[in-house]
Length: 120
Image (cartoon, rainbow, N blue to C red; front, side):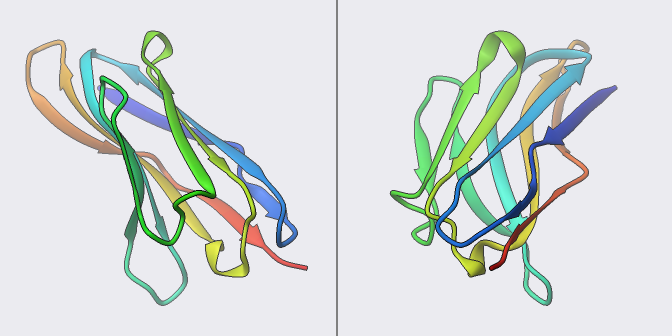
């Protein structure tokens, strides 16, 4: 069994910063890509950023130069540093991990989601 637990969301004013964390635990052999997605009310879930096990990153155009994804492989944790937040960044943010379990099964798991609200 694998679990992803997000933390760090909340309310922030436009232009402010917020940091998210997501820790993976359970029967994990290795984790490949880790990513953050988000879903705003009335919109489809979209990819925000992804990071490979070697540290290669990819960002959605809407967050480039404002958000930074990083990971600590020893802690099975992925982070998302969000700066210069805009009203349109308001969404539920979901952590996602593509991993291999200790039974050598490929598994893709999602966190429960965490609210980020940007408001004045």
